[in-house]
Each structure stands twice: as structure tokens, then as C-alpha cells.
Length: 328
Image (cartoon, rainbow, N blue to C red; front, side, top):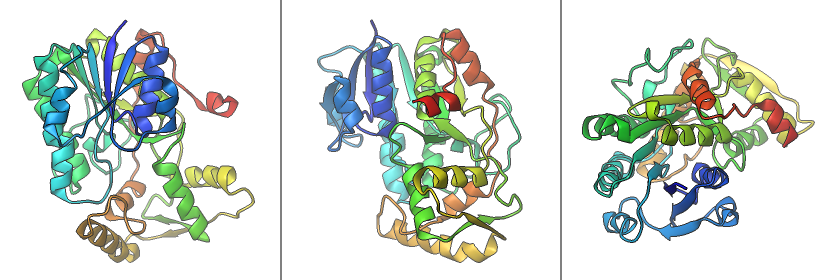
């Protein structure tokens, strides 16, 4: 029975991972902060309190217990904020925690990264071997995810780490993209699409269950060592379809009127939201879209998920697909 430490266990992805890994027979210790998701409380996993930027508290995680694997899901995840805050939580803490893991004999350090490391531009089904890191990220979130992956590759033996890169995560108590999109639909009589794609570009959804299955594969497969894997649902969903499905589920009866505009009219508002939110030290933006969100929704983020599916097959898992969502 594997002993697993999952950081960020009180959050959205982390609490789902705790539940999934326990179902696979692992003994799970969850690192949490002040707020703890109900999913984690119900899991029965052991909780330890620590803060990513408090290295003394991270050191204490390894004092009384040995772990076979560390799933590092904790991070500062936002499209606004000061660079120094992202560096502390998403780079300095990764280095410290990974170094601790190696020092204390952890067999595999699994890092929860993001598909944003590839950049925000038009993609057309490229595999991980064909993709490269964005050379000039303009947002600190992907910037320090990239730097962390590069540091892990340069400082850890390849067999002892793996990087999981989910796209837009949704499902099972989503506290991120779904409530933000629903709030937008409630406040606006129109759905605005910007740029050449007119809402028909891929919105790259990754159900949180598929993220958990990929994290498990990254922990258990020998060939996952030193590799990065994109997590993306097979079903192709456009930006337009995403909003229409959310409206049907959360706002039944609300008419959806879609308007297509060039990008330039909304750029000043996006600059203002990003700038004011960052200067104010906010975690969430004052209003949408931010510059980062605008870049996301105006590009075709269409990647290959073949490696993910191969890993599922090798671990005896299958993709969590739409039918299962509807039956749940």
C-alpha cells in the first residue's frame, strides 16, 4: 500500500485527488491550509497543516512519516497577481518540496503543472514531443510553472519525477472556471466572442476525474518518469458550445445571444482589469476579461491527448467521458 502526500489537498483538484487515490488503496496524507473542501473532510484522509511559502512547515511534513510519492497540487492559480507572489508559491516552494522529497527517499515527485506552459496561440493536435515551452510568457502563472518544470528536469533523476499538465479543469465541485463563467452569463445579456475564431475554437476541457487518473498513472508507471503529459478530454468542445451547455444547466430558459467582435475594442478593459487587480494584490480579477483570459478564449487550444490515453490503458484505467458525467 503506497503512502502518498498530496499538497493542496483542501482545494478543488487536491481534494478530488485525495478521494481518488484513497479509492485506489493508497494511504493518503493531505497538506491543507485554513480552508478545507468538504470532499476532503469526507474522505477520511489524514490532514496536516502547512504553508507553501513557510519552508519550516514544509520540513515538518517529513519528520514523522516516509512517503512513497508526493503529488504536488498546491499552487497560486490565478490570471492576475504580483510576480513575487507567484515566484514564492509556484517556483521557490516547488524547488524546496522536491528537494525534501529526494532527501527523504520519495520514489516519485509528481508535479501538477498546466497546459499553459505551451503558450497561448493556435494549436492543431500537437503531441507533447512536438510541443515546446513558451519562450516569452507574459503572465507569472505559466512563467513559474515553466521554470519549475525546467528545474525539476535539471535537478532530479528522470525516474523520480513526472509533470502533469491539465487544460481547463472542470467537474466534481468545480470552484474555478464554472462559477466564473456562470457569473458572466448571469451578468451579460450576450456572449461575446472575439477574434477570427468567432467562438468555434476549442475550449480545452479536462474533467477533474481525468486529472486524478493521470496523476495516478504518473505515480505508478515507470515510463512516466521524466515525462510531461497533457490532460485533455477527448470530446471536442468549442467556446460557444461551452457557454451554451453551462446556460442550459445552470440558467435554464435564459436565451443565449452570441456576438462576434474583433479583439481590439475589449483590449483597454482587459488591460484595466489586469492592471488594477494586480496593483491591488487581488487573487481574482475585478472583472472579466483579463488580458490572460482574453488570450485564452481567442485561441484554438487543441492538443493531442494520446499520451494520457496510453497511460490510462497501461494502468487499467479508462477515460472519464461525457456519458459518465450525465449518469453521475
